[in-house]
Amino acid sequence: MGLSDPILRAVAESGYVHPTPIQEAAIPVVLMGRDVLGCAQTGTGKTAGFTLPMLDILAGSRAKARMPRSLILEPTRELALQVAENFVKYGKYLNLTHALLIGGESMDEQKQVLEKGVDVLIATPGRLLDLFDRGRILLADCKVLVIDEADRMLDMGFIPDVERIVSMLPKLRQTLFFSATMAPEIKRLADAFLQNPREISVSAPASVATTITAGLFWVQERDKREALRRLIKSQSVQNALIFCNRKVDVDILYKSLKKHGFSVGALHGDLAQSVRFATLEKFKANELQLLVCSDVAARGIDIGGLSHVFNFDVPFHAEDYVHRIGRTGRAGREGHAYTLATADEAKAVVAVETLTGRPIPPMTIEGLDPVDPADIEAALKATGRGRGRGRGGESRGRDAGRDSGRDSGRGPRGRGEPRRERGGEPRSGGRDGSRGRRDEQAPREQAPREEAPREERQARAPREERETPRREHGSRSGDRVLEEVNRDAAREWNRNDRSRDERPRRDRDDRPRRDERRYRQEDLGPSVVGFGDAVPAFMLIPVPRPKRHRDDEAEAA
Image (cartoon, rainbow, N blue to C red; front, side, top):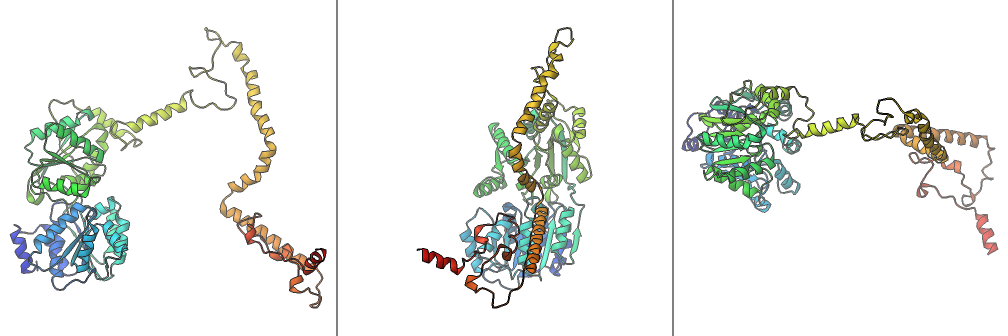
């Protein structure tokens, strides 16, 4: 494929002999200097697809201080650390340097590395922008840009930061764009960042590897933890990732499994960076058998020989299912992925099956209450009012309470409405159902209640009339108010012009001197537009007093 001998030697020592399809298709194109838009399922070696040719391209020259020659953007710190490990492994026979800019690490150490000059800069968008705003890094000499896991960048909200970073790079560069899924938004971003790219797609977008054995277990909500424990004990689990949708569920499930004697760790975004690294290293070293995590570990993390993946929750986004189960069955190995689902998660299951193009084989666990198929059908037909707000239908309960409040008699009474009894209906007369004298007198009793508010309104009428112009003025739109103010000012200005034209013209000699001239209000023009009649005092032109008035005051003194 055109790689140099030092790189091939390092690859052979790593145990790789044959390239994967994405590597075989992408490496020659990258060596040609063309932009690449690569799409391949997770676990197929996309990282080496851009790492190996970049090492070959950068081997010919040296870097300058604070000016990296290439940039790789990663969505998570764990993925950035893994890419840095690949550069160390494949470039050990090349005299190239790299820097890792991620959050949770000492910024002073990162500044010192940048001052020496780096060939490869691996960074997350947030820390890179922090150092750029501090003037510690320049991107004017960056010739190669890699945007890895672009769909994850989109999900995490990093796209505005990526767009700003791309605007800092030189126009003449090589851009490599890799993603496991190719949504329309990702395609739009690729069109904005790439120039005449070579599109490489070695598998259907969002497809699942054939080496993964998948299964779906319908369980009751109360039986989820018990079902997970029985699955772990019944399967020959070497090591496994257990995915939850929420960070709080990660902590709860971690404590539950630890209480039942399992070797387990927890990993999510709220943990300190040192704790996350330590937990992940223990799991890779087989010191922990189970790792309960959120989707922060579902993108690009390569854990060798991972035997099982358990979805304790069906993911909110169907694309996350592909990335979750893609942690197992990598590099041709066999893997197992099992999903626990309740009836409330039926729509999420259908979304996953629609995305992958094939159903998840259903399985059962003995000893647990089965889920009624009617409940699953009802969940599929239900409206999306309360979807995604919780497992127990909390939103439906709140909505039902609001709906019942509209129809009940306990709502707020309108003016003039008769007072209701505890039952919600007006109190009737006799026990036989006939209306008593109280019902006959109800209209006469209601009349004073209707007149009382009218008398109060009449009593408040003068004040309301004074406030009416202000309320009408506030109810109009700003453009309409400004238009009326300008029109009134123009009309006043024209009237003043006509009044000045009708006055007899005086000769130049009859005009008073500057210090004796009187300023008239019409000579000042209209009021300031936007203030109306309430013009601030500091915006008015002061009127000088005539000289003879000052002389008269002096004589009087």
